[in-house]
Amino acid sequence: MTLPGPPFEHLGRLTDSVGLVEHASGADPLRVHGYCTDDVARALVVVLREPDPGEQLRRLEALYFTFLVRAALPDGRFHNRLSAAPECLFLDESGGDDTVGRAVWALGAAARRGTSPGLRRQALRRFERCAVFESPFPRANAAAALGAAEVLELDHDHRPARALAERLAERLRGPAGTDDWPWPEPRLAYENARITEAQIALGDALPDARLTENGLALLDWLVAIETNDGHFSFTPAAGWTAGEPRPAFDQQPIEAGAMADACARAYEVTGEARWADACVRAAGWFLGANDAAVPLYDPVTGGCRDGLGARGASANEGAESTLALVSALQQARRVQTARSAPRRDSASTVAAPT
Image 1: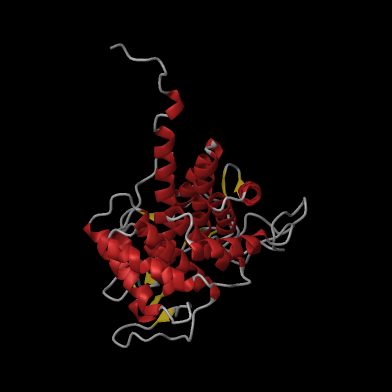
Image 2 (image 1 turned 180 degrees about the horizontal axis):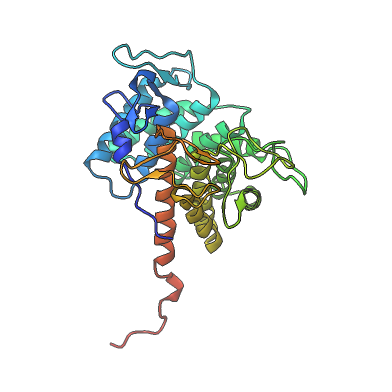
């Protein structure tokens, strides 16, 4: 499948001198609704993933990191919602566990991938403050686990990251499912593939082969249960369990973004082509390979529609959906590049003449 490169035009349009505007009317930022740490953390991860960032992405990196520093609380938690200018006041005492988990992920990514030594050092210090993270919620744990995996990739012996990773690994194992329903929850909810990605990432980082195998098995099941006639048919916003009708709507871009991330991670760990294929299929969902045969990617703006209904897509292009699009296209590009690269074991072992 021929896919476009990851677009950053709309992300730049949604970003002002304060942060990333959460909502949009069409492609126009709705600044009156303010900003949230959830989206800024996701945006920092996406920007840091680019292999050759230019001046615009470096500016976004610095701005998003500054927003996270501003949102941080002394106990390792984070505010989530910031009101619009000119007040720019945080509207909550603290964000929920998902907010904190995503911020931990972003700080771990910045500690490893930041484009300046100063930002990397500061991100690592702030990650260490957050490494006390505890939550009963699997998606919050999954996001924080990805941050711990980033730091362990940087320093395999980093004590706070290792302690956090080991603690989260136990939580992410979750209750065992059944043969008919192996998922650790009675219903699929939101950002489902993120749980499997975290298991694969932590299993690889610690290492813990059983955790990796569990994550791969769950992802295999999830890919199968969310595939319809060769394309992805994602769990709707209301959730889904066995016996309920499929396809179901409205489907959210965050599901496709998380699926692309998880399948790219599975390909990185196993080298199996089927995971690369699934990653590309998840990206293709944005281009119309979905239940409504409608593209969510807007090539004019570089944005993404906020949801997929049975008869079409939302007209609005908010931050969460656009970040999911960019992330999926980044991962598809990565696995396609890896597959086209010459294999090391294909090189000739015959000595060249001298």
